[in-house]
Image 1 (tube, helix red, strand yellow):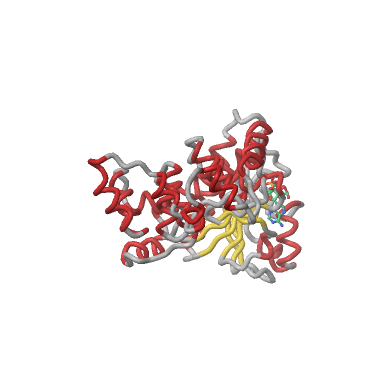
Image 2: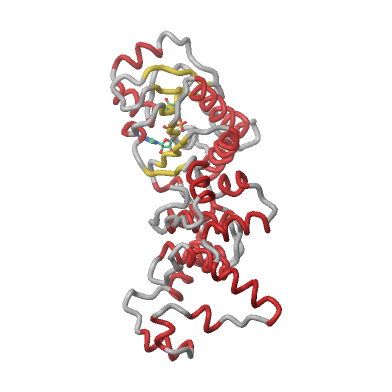
Length: 331
Ligand code: APR
């Protein structure tokens, strides 16, 4: 995945470069700055002393020393006052300048903390949004894997209303694995065998005469064929689709070139979100990859919640998944 959101300690990340949320002196401090200097050892500070500081919004690069990362890119985020003093522009510049430096050093993997979201007081959800927006734009033109490292859960704030809405939706829909198919068959008034054989969509689907043959054709098409058909129908380019799904180009070309390719469930769901498919279309696409949205899986129910609300904002979906301790889309 070109952009992954992970929970980790950035000093433990084995990547080409980690980014440090430093101050203008570049002589260390607390927070992630302190953790990086502590893990890197005295050599890092010695090199930093030769750099003559760094301006807010700018970035400078050093060796990684005792860190698993090869380089440390030091950038200085803005101190947040009220959002009306150019803080957003400066924070965007931190990500852009750091990515440019990483690209210049031919880094293939880079890990960012949430710059300015600690001591410098930038609201974490806005800081995350800035990070995702700038990095995603960069990745449209560049091949690199970028990690946003969330150190503490507070970084993923979610509104109380949204949280309780989703919790209620989970309660209404969550069933344990041992659902009594007998109860299901009476509830849905279809033969129990159909439930067991998971043929509900054929029993329940009511095709009008004139679209029956196109529907029958669609039942036979593979995941890959449906994906490419949907990209065309939505008027998207391949790149727009897989970038929005946060899927890397290599994986997409595998799916495109192998008509029988079976993706993982999170990959299939990421494409459904990228294409903004309805719930039925999502179920259909998942079925072609051999999966179904399961009501005994909170991740699936949260995805179903957002699709049923027509909300395909991967950022908000990830906030919710994170708040319910689920793995993230694109992670
Ligand atoms: N790994 C990943 N992220 C971390 C780690 C870690 N080991 N430690 C802290 N963080 C996170 C914090 O939770 C926060 O979300 O990094 C983010 C940035 O917080 P700070 O480190 O406080 O950085 P910032 O808000 O940019 O303030 C910079 O703090 O440490 C001083 O010298 C630094 O003066 C500078 C100021």
